[in-house]
Image (cartoon, rainbow, N blue to C red; front, side, top):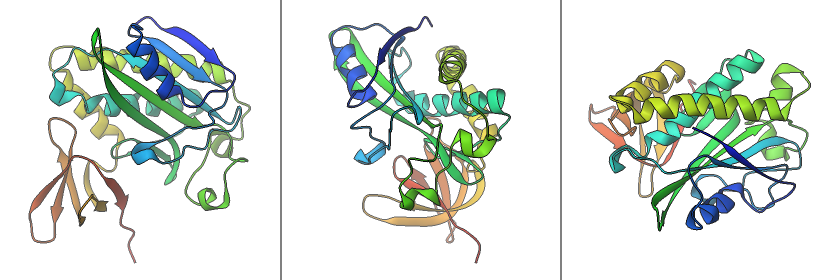
Length: 247
């Protein structure tokens, strides 16, 4: 994949800009990068804290050729790429919390947001990736549950190196996803990097119910399988999944 970088000093949301560019005909590989987001967002419309130079804020325009049922795997593909980037550059040992959060030492260090839109050129996906570089901007309520590259490594950061490595890693795994048996390979790679794949005691908050149980792998589209205490397998397509801590 060839990347074209479009940089902003400050922007509302890189994902919103990527969606707009896709509607205007932008090709696959356009990468929106900002030093600051004033309206950054995560899943379910949550605010993503995006202070100036405190994180890597980027969004890619994708025009996937995979079957629609496999589109959720794009999020998993990006999570793999972020994990490998943090390991390669900083020696960290990230964990993927299903489906889109990257954790280090049980604290969130990054997240992914994939949004779709119809365009004159067909379906497009805006893939947003956020990685916390500094913790100094965290409000008190986030300090206990989030972390940053600086907090974990005590290293001076090179944002451009992080951008180049993360996009390269994503391109490699996106190629795998689009190749023969790509969905199966991505699920396997994701499972290797996530403690949530199987045997994790979790609570899943869905729109109309809360499910407690143990994770039992992924469906072919990346949905999470959870076995309840009664032995029933529940399929989690969307929702907030949290680890249940032992008392």
